[in-house]
Image (cartoon, rainbow, N blue to C red; front, side, top):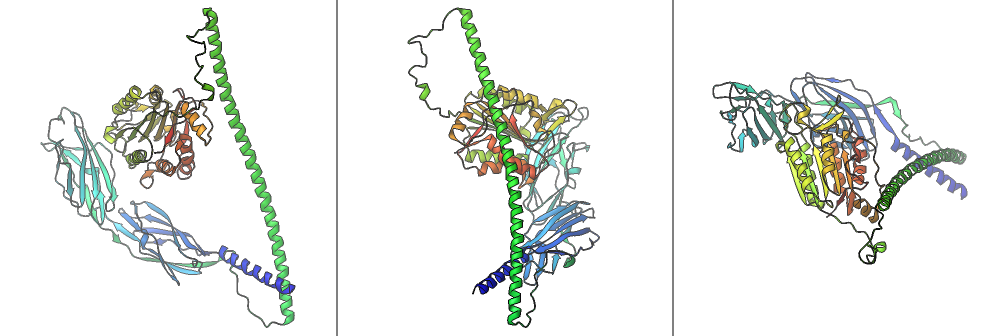
Length: 626
């Protein structure tokens, strides 16, 4: 009976071991030569499969002067047990450009095969030289119709200004067709009545629009005054070959054959042993062998577990040492802050004593002599006294001068505005988008906050746009919408912003800057109250004034594009505020939420710190949920 039980256990161990080995097995497929066509080169690498997936890495290089369209939904993996297409998604590859994608089939547990085929009917050529839409000349005037159509392109006038030396016009274009809209505004001109034409001063680029997609076209024209006063003469915008509707032409289908490479196998597939003629002696020998093998495996597993436990113990020890060091550092910083507070208190008491000594008179009070008697100060409870919340939101996509347009800045700030209005307690919103975000307008709104905000109020400022850093001046700047050149005289310096932050009399001010080189606003060392998740903590840090900033990077460029139509920084900023379900959510918690994912998904490193010499006392800006 005992021998039969041991035999069953041994057989069970072998079965579990074989199953585990099968799941961990990985097939590596033979390296395929690159696919060369007149339109593109396609290189396939790292093709392999496991039980739950098959994948490979595809590098597409566009060899043409046209665009290539990659339709992910037209990639199909073919197995004996069925076909597995990819999810539908479109990618545009620029002329001479390159697209790298990992293509993967999932959805079951039968992908561990020795051979399969993959159909690539997913590439198409998109010409930009087809028939152009003939758009009538557009008369630039403040009374112009606000919307009009050019074939399957719907245009909306967003802004027009005519001045003596400069004319500015901003349009929004939406492609309403079912193919692709090619918008190339690089050749559009402005024409005078006498036929003279002048090119657009603003740098633009060709864009491919999918059905329903929108873009903005900004134009800046400058004509010498001796030629014409632009404020008085008639100006016609000549579209030339700006709009083209193009149909993607499918390229020849390619089929990949993925075959297992016997020289490159990770682990080994368990084989089904042949069943020999079995005798009683044979069975007993097999049982004894299995028991021996089981004992050996168990010993090896025990040894492996022991090594793993030792490694985990060493890791835990190292983490404990690190936590102790961090705790000691936090304690030292807190003790330093307390010592500085005690020193300041001692200095005040010393000064008061000197004043009393110099005056020779004892301070007296009307009544009993104790100004706090009867107020029960020692047993009173401090509650959070919350003033008004102000939000100044600045987003700039369109620039009038030498600065290129951005794609996501305005959308980032608009989404933040919607989120704050719907989920958090804010009383006043001031928004400056695109042409409203001039240098003068931004400074005036800062000055308005200095005048209107009271000592118990809270101010949140968010800037999304271009930033600049002048190495020879060692100084960073915001670039407003109306910066025509790259001269610092047209920017707003971080020193100026620091001055305005110091002038706003709020209890708390939080500045968030999603711009290149925004981290330059931090200068010098500062100290804050360590975080503690308690009502007492929020009451304490709310009572102490704060002037802090969160920036999307340090002295470095930051990305405009990222995820779901937002910059990487704005995407995780919004995600943190959306996911918060607590009543109180301070700036430190917000920064800790977004810091790691931004660093892991970009080349930028966000920063968070008090702004030096602006009145910060170690408190925190607190978002209060409705």
